[in-house]
Image (cartoon, rainbow over all chains, first blue to last red; front, side):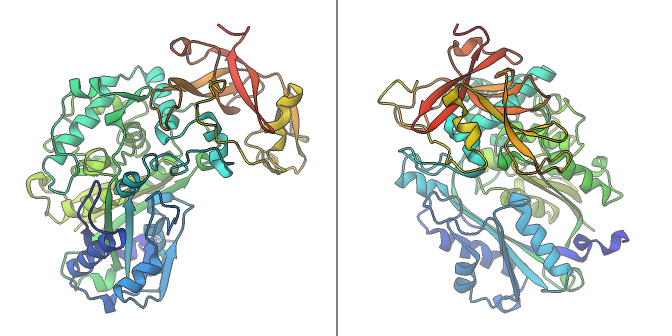
Length: 398
Length: 142
C-alpha cells in the first residue's frame, strides 16, 4: 500500500471546541459536552445536519465517578444528529481510540464528518463523594475486584500515581534523573497555563514550590499529578477532499501511531523505564518522511509528569534516558525554546481533559489561534495520549 | 497494617478458575505461578495459553517465593479515610525468570530501607478466602 492510501492521509481536522473548565462546573456534563460540540461544528462552518459520524472514548461509565459520564447516544440525541456511524470503545488504544476509529470510518467511506468528543466530570464527582477520584470510584468498603486492577488494588495501589511511581523510581535510579528535573515539567505547565484563560490552575509555581509540595507516592509529588476537572472537548474530523471547502484551513494528519501493552491486564514488560508507547512512536515515524527535527511544537501526555518523560523518548524526541535533561530548567520546552511543549498548560495545570486537551491545543496552535501562547510559525506538531493504551498523531498545516 | 481494625479493608480479588491458584496457594504456604508444560516459561498474570510457544498446558507450579524488588513507590497519600500510610507498593521480579513480575507490598521493613534490587521473599496475609502474597526482606523482618 502506498502512503497516500493510508487512512489518516484521507482525513483532516476541520474544527475544535472546548467547554469551560470547572472544578467543579455549575453545568451538567451533557451541557458541557453540547457546548464543546456546538463550537467544533461551528468552527468548521458546518451545521449539525452535516455531521454523519460520532465517536467518543470510552463511552458512558455510569458509576458516578465522573470519569466518563456522557455517552454517544445522549450526545446524538442532544445535538439532534442522525449519524451513519457511531463508535466508542473502552479498550484498545485508550484516549485516541475514538480518533483512530473516526479516521478509519471516514477513510472507509462510512461518513464524511465525524465529531469526536471526550467529557469528564471528575471534579463534580469528588464534590459528591470525597474519594470518588480513586481507582474504583468512591469505594469505601471492600468489595471484590476483577480484571487487570485485581493485581494491584489489593495492595492499595488506589491511584495510578502509585503505579507510575514505580516507573519514575526506576527511571530515576537507572538514569540518575532528579526531582529537580522532573519538577521542571510542572513549573513549565503552570507558566503556560497562565497564558490560557481556560486553564484551571494559572498561578505560577517555582521549583521550590514543587519540591515543597506534598509527596503522593515516591517520587511523585502533588504537582506531578494532573488535576480532576469538569469539562469537554470536541474535535471534528472530515474527509480530506471536502475539508478544503470549510471555514478553517484543513489540518493534515501526517501520520498516526498506536500501541497496546499489557499494563491494563496487569502485565508489565521491560524494566519500568519504558512504555509500550515506544511502538506507537516507531509506527508514527514509519508513516511519514518527516522526522522529530521537523516538529515546531509537541503536546505530550502528562497525566503524570513521568509519562511525559517516557513519551518524549517513545516519540524519539529524546534518546532513552535523556528526556529528564531535555526538560531540565524548562528553557528547551518554553514557548521560545527548541521545542515548545504542552502550551495550554497540559493536564497538570489546564486540567484533565484526558488527552483531548492536547489535541485541541495542537490544532489551536497550527491554526495560529494561540493568542499570547502562540508558537511562532507552527506548521508541524505532535500529540500523544496514554498511560495504559497509547496513541499519537503527527499534524501538519500546509 | 491489616491488624489495625480501623483501617479500610483491602479490595480483594474476585476468584475465578484462572487466578484461584495464585490467590489461594498461600493457604499451603505456596506461591503458585502458571508455567507452560511444554517450554517451561512462567506466565503471570496467568493465561490459558503459553504466550511463548502457544501450548495450552499452562498449570500453576510452586516457585521459590524469592525475588528482588524491580521497582517500588512509597505511597504517602491516604486515599481513603484511616488508610495507614506510608506503605510500599512494589513490583517484585521472581528469581525463576527475568521480568516475571508480581505486584505486592513490601512489609516487615522500614519503608525508607526498601531499595531497587533488594532481595525479598514471600509471606502470606490471609483475608477471607484470599491469601495475599506479600514480600519481606530475605531472612525475615527487619
